[in-house]
Length: 50
Image (cartoon, rainbow, N blue to C red; front, top):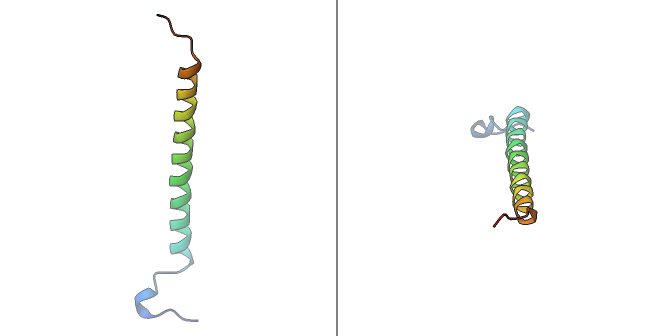
């Protein structure tokens, strides 16, 4: 099946690059969220010097 002229850029390489970009952004955000949550948890459990 051949793509119409306006959609020729939607080939396997284009999809691969975009899937890779989405995965990289997702993994970065997931790690950042996990680290932020761990930091908050440590601060909740840390004894406070008053």
